[in-house]
Image 1 (tube, rainbow, N blue to C red):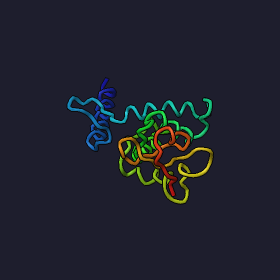
Image 2 (cartoon, helix red, strand yellow):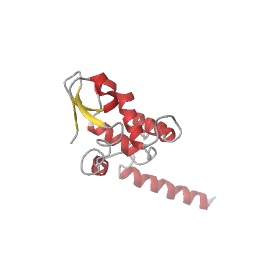
Image 3 (tube, rainbow, N blue to C red):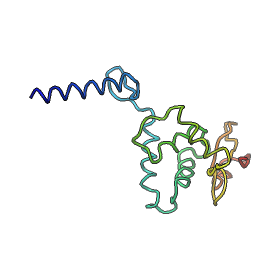
Image 4 (spheres, one colour):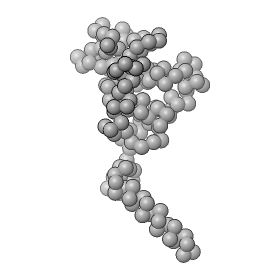
Length: 152
């Protein structure tokens, strides 16, 4: 019984340290808050679909499909794409923070920008109906707007 109590104290202290470091966001009642719940759920769905579903064979396919289905004619923001790429394959991992942006932004800009080049479908920039510049899949952009361009 004494050993169990000691172990419980160690577990509690470990959780207390994690919460103190704010690795896990909680509300005033100590309940874990996850503002990225919807994007994590979508990423988890696409993790299963990759290789199992029709048409979604790669992470790139999943990202383009997510952008089209989730954002439609509004288009996706840069941050929306980077966050989804982060959670795809890591839906149960640590919460996305700005320190993760650099690694995942390479998929959109730079020499190895595989989301903006190559294949049958890739990202393009367009102006949505609200006049905002957003990202769209090439296969969908003409359904959303007449003003779009390739990303260089």
